[in-house]
Structures are given as C-alpha cells and as structure tokens.
Amino acid sequence: MNLDTRTYSQGIAGEVLAVETLLEGRPKYFDPAAHRQAGDEQTRYRDALNELQLPYDYDPADTLADYLNNVALDVTWLSTNSSRNDYRKTRVEILRTCGGPRCEIIRDSLDGQIIEINTYDAGQPVDSIRVWAPILAEQLDDLAAEMGPQ
Image: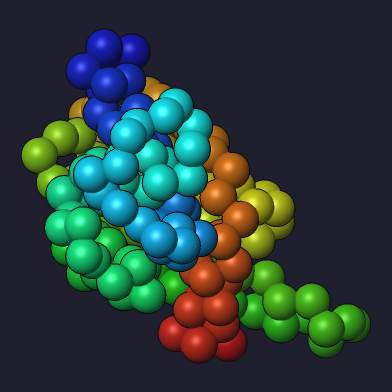
C-alpha cells in the first residue's frame, strides 16, 4: 500500500466524521472564538467546519446535500424491501475522487451504523477504513429508500 493512498483514505475518513459531527447539529451558544478544550462540543463542531472548509455561520441542516453536491462525482442508490418483514435493505456508493486516487464511500444497511471508505490504486483496492457514523448512515438509508430502485 502506498503511504499517499493511506493518507488520502484517512483524509476522506476525516471528512466523513466531520459530516457526522455537523449532522449532530450546532452546539447551543456556539462561539467560534471560544477557548479550545480538547473533546468539547464546540471544539469538535469548529474542527468539523474547518475540515470541510465551511464558514462558522454555516447551517448544518444542509450538510449532507452540500457534501454530496460538492465532492461526489457519482452516487449510486440501491434499496430493496423484504416481502417477509418490514426490513429495508439499502446500499449507497459515493464515488469520491477529487485530487487523489479513486475512492468510494460505501453505506450498506447490513453494516449497522458503519460507513466504509475504500481507496484504489490502478483499479485495485489498496486501503479500507470503516468509521462509525450513525446519523450519516441513517440519512443515507433514508435517501436510498427515496432515490434508489425498489
């Protein structure tokens, strides 16, 4: 595995976690100039805005749509409903290849609340990172149910 590929994968994982943080919503009384304390809610929110290069007055309600519109080259939506129960299976494949190797961000409802980032070199998978992002996973599942073939 190429070190640059690993670094790129980790960068995309950082973006996914930043999207998750913004989807949690703006902290009450958010003050971007407030004193930074490692792990506090305001610092995590400010760091997420910085990671995605967004202004401090950004409306987090637009996070998922903006992220998909700004970085996704292609999105594949798949959704099926089970006839035996009310379970819905979804899969979302986001092609993310801006300024680096081919990268796919995968959401599969069978993976629980996990988002998987797969990076390729010369068409071969070379790196995979899995991150826990329950809010993003749920929102992608909901969109897949609306957008994907039934």
